[in-house]
Image 1 (cartoon, rainbow, N blue to C red):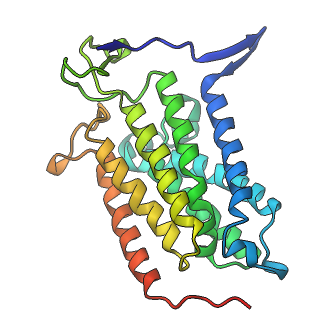
Image 2: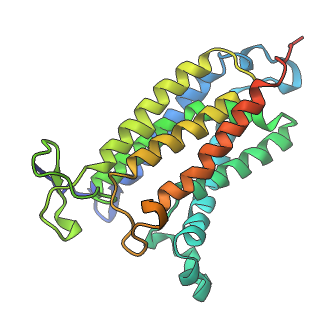
Length: 273
């Protein structure tokens, strides 16, 4: 078995200025989104859209900005509502104490959806067209976030068999028994594998809504699987039916993706002028 290497969370420090690895992973996520978004402009139907509705680099940059706002606001509110509603209702001001940690992917997803709805309305574009554009560019950012989780030594996995070659001891967990490095599992599943599958799927022109639906089903499924290896939040533990909060939040996500995909498949293929 392996031992967590206790990586210094500060990548570089010059006097009082400290640059954290976690911040660098966010920068990497932003850079990858711009890189992939510009290449997404070459895919259909976006490459053939002309006139006032044409897609440009400015759109990619604006979507990134709005997406970041949606992730931060939605992620924080989602954590407060999904994971500790009673605690934050008793002290609402602590909702703004984001430096204390506490973010939810599923809340961040809802925040991003809200920001994309606003973007689509402001640019007079179909919302599903915007969602289809964004979806394949997201998994690499999720992968970068899991790298940050591993560097910080957080969100470790459940106990593993002592015979598991990559089982890892996380001393900060309070136990010296080997655990699954669930951050790595999520990096590979929700990040790398989901990106490859979704990018290949989105390279061909699809009916409006199909790509976004594939993201919902793909992420929800991979996250549901990874949760079996990830240590549940100590203050929640395992919930009904032996599932974690993360898994329960994935269920409506998967269902919504399936419904959206079936609906999209029944729509006629749009003919462009």
